[in-house]
Picture (cartoon, rainbow, N blue to C red):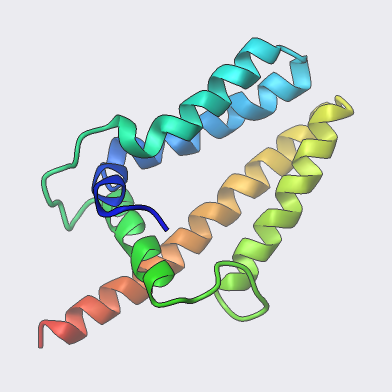
Length: 143
């Protein structure tokens, strides 16, 4: 669990979008064996949740709500991976991620590209499902 200040800073949409965009750089570093790219990307991903300042509340921003939804899901003690919905999306993403690492390591260009897109798409779908649940719970609380 992240501390309160880390969650606040991580909810900055710049944090979420740059983390997402860093993923292809991570795979590229593995694929090309550019260890500096891989190391720099891993360092960026490690410091990213606290790199940006806490944003102004922007309830209309998708990525902002995505982080709030992930936090709510986590604080309710719900697993991120499982056989229920939407956890199965995260499980599928984990499988795609492992396939992506293998394809990049073996330098299989088509498999690397397809599994990179699949990993990112499944992550976005999972986050979108969490946002739907978050939005529904927020609208029920305001009534």
